[in-house]
Length: 199
Image (cartoon, rainbow, N blue to C red; front, side):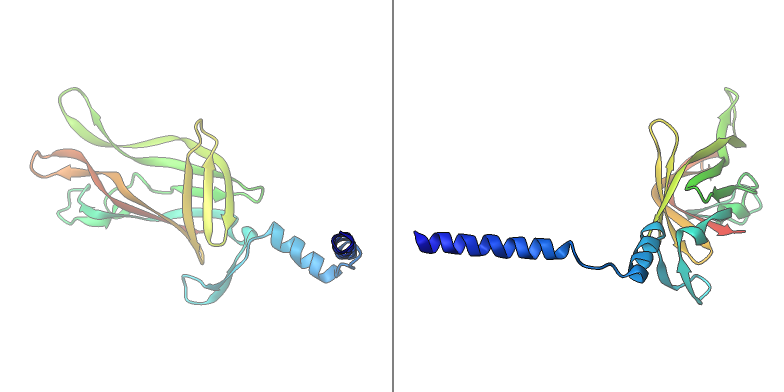
């Protein structure tokens, strides 16, 4: 019984020594500053889209981006020039000047433009639309950019940052195309990749 008390007392004293000694360690001011900077800015080093070494930080992604590619796994010929393309920007001007702005306070503003099918009751046609801008917040973890809209319920979109571009892929998305059998606009199911380039 005395041996158990002695063992318990030894463990208790050792625990007090271990835990109290941790509280008295001096903090390296340089290490503390580096840790604070890391916690406030996600950093990824590596090869950028241009092939040069670069660093991705929350401050380096801040800025305005222009939609430079809207690629689909199914080619379309929306402009009826006889040449189908997988880049919808080559087929229609409905996405022209579509911008995404990432602000330094981790908010964003994104244009909401596109092409839709409209009907007058007899005939269906393709028509450009411009909806109100999307707004919300953004965060960066590694090279993954997450946009969360202010809508109810919020929409969450994930992008990949590479150099000066931001891209996202949606599998089984819908794009407006042309049904060559019925000779009418139609929604086509395909994979979609959008690319924004920093301006």
